[in-house]
Structure formats: structure tokens, C-alpha cells
Length: 339
Image (cartoon, rainbow, N blue to C red):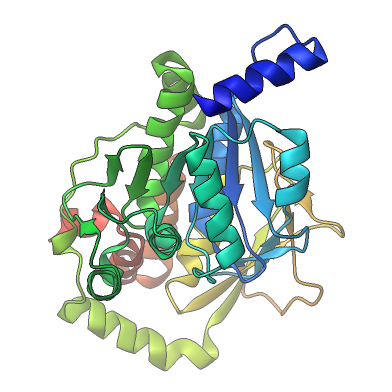
């Protein structure tokens, strides 16, 4: 309500007649941000054409994408975002940030929530919200592997394992990395309606999924531990693989490949881009390392079903156990289907 009043006043002062599109801020941080947690919601929101989406960080310093070797170029600082969008964002998406406890960010999030913004965390981005006190007394979810630590540290939160995303009031939290895709489609439907969501999913060749989920089946079993041990033995000699980017690349496919291949621990994926970076079809600029290693292979960006296709690439390179090991880390349904 407060945001709508501010927006109406801003439109009246500027003489703007058309209704502004919903504004989505996706947070990044110089400490690092989980790759798919950022690229998946950005890809879906940007492709919709129905919302304004911006990557916001404390500074314009490139933010490392983790895992993998690439950097995302923030599009706004908190200060510049406030000038561009004086009414504030309609929705804030919080990926897993390596620095979860940041007082200035926490204060900004609480201020935006007080103004009526929808807050969405992806994976262990829920830790950022919990550190800010925004989840106290609420139901929430996050990555399966952090459950014990979350329950100990944030006892005021009711942590759930039965859904890929959980909405409690104005806050939505998601399960592990792969939940970013269906949850982002659901958030787009909330912002722009079912027709826009369905059209966006069709153009991105994505299938909207339900929220039913059983996180309790995701655990380090014998196969996963054996695969991890084998990857540890191969770690020093792991392959260096190239993910070549050209302007207009698919953000979702890029994130899936950089993230998934690096999670095999048998390979390290590097973005390869022109000087100054490559800009995606949605306007996201990705920067590469100044010095690149000698690559043993180049990984193509999938044209459809990026995460499933990436798991297929891993299976072909390192076998089905490695693909399931990556699926376990991403909390992807492939792991559940294999049980």
C-alpha cells in the first residue's frame, strides 16, 4: 500500500500517464553470489518483458559467481536504484550470498519490507533473511544440506522440508538451487499474471512445476560419498573447461553449465568472454578472468531444458553417479527420481 501511494505521487509529479511495470531487484554482493540463484530468476524475469529487473549490489564492483569462474556486473547500487525507482521495488530476490550477515543490507531489506515489497530468497539466500530477522515466526525453507545449522541458529523459524517454495505473508523462500526456476515462474505469475508466465515458460522451453517436494530424501548416502571421494582424488588434476559467451547468450543456460560442471569437482568451468564482458539477451553482463588456463574442453550452452541438459552433459562426461552427485547439490529432482 505504501509503495502504491509513493508510486502514484511520483507519477503525478512527473506527469507520467502509463502505469509503471513491476520492479524486481535481484541482490548481488562483492563477497560472491551463487550462480544459478542469480541467473535463473534474472533470465525468467527479463525474458518476460513484463517487469523491470535489475541486479543491485553495494557497489558496481564485479561480483564473483560461485561456483565457477565468472563475475557478474551489477546494474545498480542501492543508492542509484533508489534514484531510478523512488517508490522502491515490488519484489526483491535474494540469492545465496557468501556474506550472509551484513547490517546495512539487513536494514535495507527491512525498510523495503516495511514499504510493502515482496521478498523472495533462493536456496540459502534464506540465511540472509534470517540474519535480518525477517523470518522470525514464519515458515520457510532453504537448501537441504543447511537444515541442521539453520535449526540451531534460527530457532524462531519453522523450517519446512515439504515444498520447493514456501510463502508466508509477504515472504517466499525456496529449497535448493534448482527450485529457482519453478519458483521464479510462480513469482512472475504473481507479478504479471498467468498468461505472461505461460508465454515466458514456452519461449524459454521450460515446464512450470508444482511446489510439492520431499527434501528429506536428499542426503549424503554411500554412492554420493563414494563419488565425492573419487572427485577429491581427481581434484588436483581436474579439467579446466570453457563456457564461451557471446552477446545475446542465454543466462539460464550459462548459469546451469557454469554451476553444474564445477560441482562435479572433476572440472572447473570458466566463462570465456570478450574484453569488457559479454551481455546476455536480457542485459546482464558477465566478465571473464583476465588470465585463462589451457582448456581441455569447451561446453556448449544447451538450447532447451538447461539444467536437465547440463546433467546430461555431466553424465556423458563422467558417468551417471557424477550426474546424480551434481543433482544432489542442486536439490534437483533427478536425485529423488533415482532413489
